[in-house]
Image (cartoon, rainbow, N blue to C red):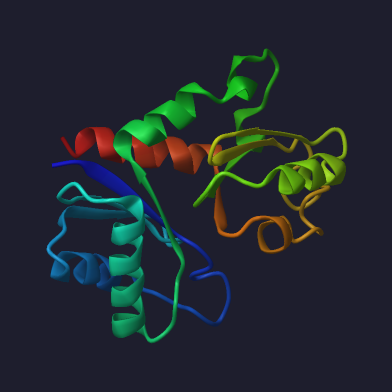
Length: 182
C-alpha cells in the first residue's frame, strides 16, 4: 500500500477552524486509511491507503472533514516518494552558508501558471529567494517568514489556486514519519 501525506491548509491558525489531531486521526481511520499519524497541530497527516489519484483522495478527505468538523479544509496530497524528491531537489540545501531554519516549501495542488510565476519573481525581493519546480515552490527567507517580502503579499490567495507552506524542519520530519511507516 502506498504511503501518503495530507497537508491541510488553514487549520488551527486562529480561533476558527480548530481541529484536535486525535479527532483528525479518528476521521482518517473512519475512511479506512491505515497507520494514521499526525505531526504537530497544523494538519500534517501520514497514512497508508490503496492506490488512487491525488484528486480522488483529496475529495474524499475534504468531504470527511466537512462532515466531521463542520468546515472545509483544503487538502494537498503527496506520496512518500514525491516528498522524498522534494527534499532531494531543494537546491538551497546545496549552497554553503544557508541557514536551514530559513527554508520553506510551498506545496501546490497543480503547477502554477506562467503569469503566477512571473508575479512571484516580481514579489520576491532580496534577500528573499524563490524557486519553483513543478508543484513546489522553495523559499529561502534569510530574515524569517515574518519579515519576508512575501509575507505582506497574499501569494497563496492571489497567485496560486491552492497551496500550503511548511518550514523545512516540518517537511523533513514528515518524511521521516513516512519512512518509518514502512
